Amino acid sequence: MKTTQRGYIMIYTLLMVGLALGVVAFVMNRVVIFDGLTRLMLQRAQARQLALGGITLAMSELTISEQMEKKSSSAKGLPGQEKEAPPEDPDKKLLVKILPLLNKWQTIPLQQERDGIKGTIHLYIASENGKFNLNDLYDFEKKRFAGEPEKKSAPTGPEQPKTQSATVEKALAVKEQSSDGRKLLQAVLNALTAQMGTSLSISDLEGFYTKRKKPLDDVTQIMEIPGFAAFKKAIFVQPPSPDKKDQIYLTDLFTVSRPSAQIDPWLFSDSVRGVLGLSRVKQSNKKGFTPEQLKQVKLDVNWATEWNTLLQPVYEKDYASLPKTLTPFFRSKCEMTTFSVIAYGTVGKVTVRYYAIIERIKKEQNKVVLMIKQLYQV
Image (cartoon, rainbow, N blue to C red; front, side):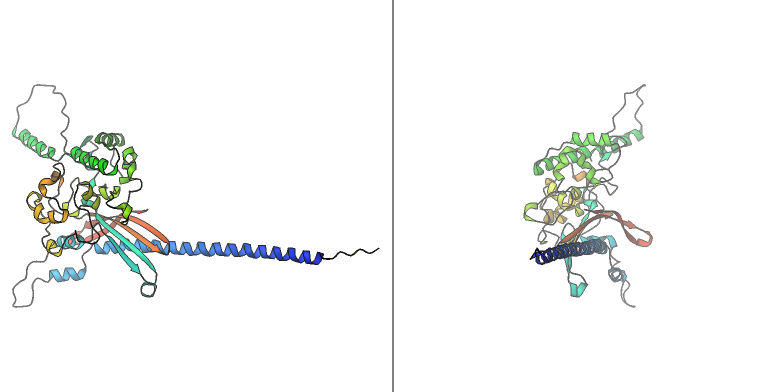
């Protein structure tokens, strides 16, 4: 007897169609993932180039253009005319140029039609000369803070009569003691304790220095001290937002990138201004340097007598109200040797961030070279 089986062709067809659909879905899923990953990698590469380009742009802002140099150097005038005033000091021109730019976010939008790419560059420039130097406020060789007297050893013989040179040395020691790194850092740590709700003491810092036995290579190494854990989310300056209003940032407050314990009042960073109780930088520039104030800029300043004229309108605090532990560290001659730059490059939803330390080196014949000393992706 013959048996017939109906419907198996349809079942077989459905199985083959289902298998084909599965293969197609798998391939499409892979294509979509690959396409998205490729697009993401492309945007990341473009954002990285924008961020690095932002650092280059910052370096151009830290130079005096040849056009400005030629304009200032044309002091002889036409034949038969009297000589004009001597050319202005390039350092003074640079200081006047950068004061309105320091400690402020710059935003540079880029358009596809005009620039060949659609994206945004965010830029922030600060001077390392306006931050507290963690390395030079402590003498690692003598194991004491800057300005502290050296511990005297017990005398082993009869006391010698004081000579004129000994009197001079004593006078110099008294002058040195007026700049007390311990008291300055203690005041800074007290302010941080009050503003950030952390617990920081000079004994913790001194213990860290003693244990380390050598200068810091990077500011973030100070976070080995438990009290500095409060800076975990505030290491580098970030664009302003309602929840980060008047934030203190670690690398904006301290530096290890310049060889001096002195600090330049012209170049105070925003975080230093916050710790000292000075007015903070406003992005609108309403509290910044006005054109009239920029005309009064000078490189050599006696801050005890000229602070109230030059900087009180900007920082909104007179000289007498400044911490007495701070003023002995004021640098009277402005020297812009080192800058820090934070650059964001954004393409689509991808943002790449770089932090750079830029050194300004003077060469012969007043030539200046800018060199990237350190570069971090953050």
